[in-house]
Image 1 (cartoon, one colour):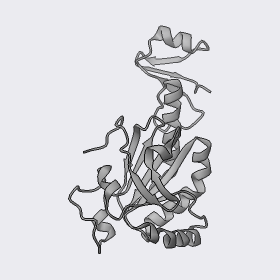
Image 2 (tube, helix red, strand yellow; image 1 turned 120 degrees about the vertical axis):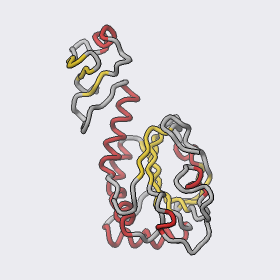
Image 3 (spheres, one colour; image 1 turned 90 degrees about the horizontal axis):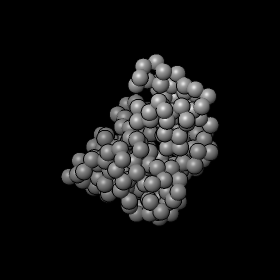
Image 4 (cartoon, helix red, strand yellow; image 1 turned 60 degrees about the horizontal axis):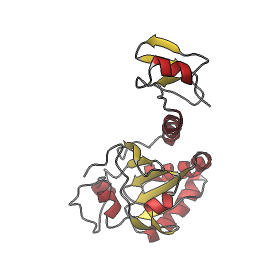
Length: 218
């Protein structure tokens, strides 16, 4: 079953490098970033895990918890974490789920439902498990991203996307192309001009009846 934006993020219980968790309980009242990897000791993923560890304080500031997943046992993750710290200069500072039996990968439709959890298995066998799920405090999926094995993910973009999602949730605004925090935002068409005037007494700019911009709400 495909996971679509607006769906409830499937709940699961799993072993991680920080102990057993139940996903929804672990999220609590926070936002969550769940990102997956096709195998431990893979080069692109090694760089991603290290970079996200450096970026984690920014997610913390936004009330967003970070959790990784790799299709190998938790026992393998500890050695990989040492490699990541050695090569990337930052220790992994968030939990990593062990998903050797592909339970979570299948639950989130990241791999063919008939894929085997057995070994030996190469990263290519799990090539589709390169996904990012942004989940809100209501446990609903707010955004998804999927990358090929050859292209490292842009976690600065994930952070920017989180900012946009949180801004929309708080102020009911949309963000234009290449938006960055602090820049003007878009008033959705669901808000009438009359309501917009009450909501934004300082005024807004109308480029077209369906395209109105306003300074980012604080």
